[in-house]
Length: 108
Image (cartoon, rainbow, N blue to C red):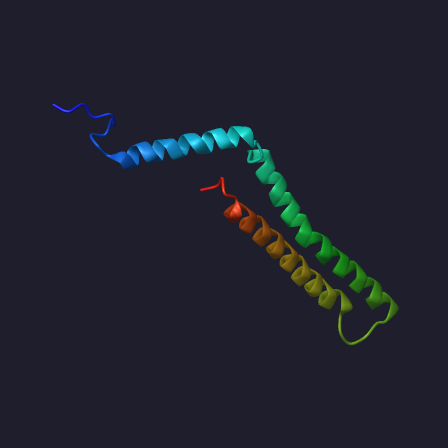
C-alpha cells in the first residue's frame, strides 16, 4: 500500500485550495483594511459623493428660482444635474477601486 500524503486520496486540488485559503488569511491579517467598519465607511463615502452634488444643485436651483423666476424650474433641473454628476463621480471612484483590487498581485 502506498502512503498518500494528501488527505483526500490523491486530490492535489484540495491541497492547493487549502494553501490559497491560508495565504488569503495571512494576507488579511497583514492588511487589516477589510473589516465591517471599513465597508460601512466606504458605503457612506459613496453615498455622500452622490448626495453632496445633488443637494448643491438643489440649493443653487432654489436660489436661481428666487432670483430669476421663469417658466421652468431651476431647482428641478439642477437637482437632476447634481444627481447625474454625483452618480458619475461614485461610478468612477468604484471603478478605480475595482481596478486597483484586480491589479493587486497579492489578490487572487
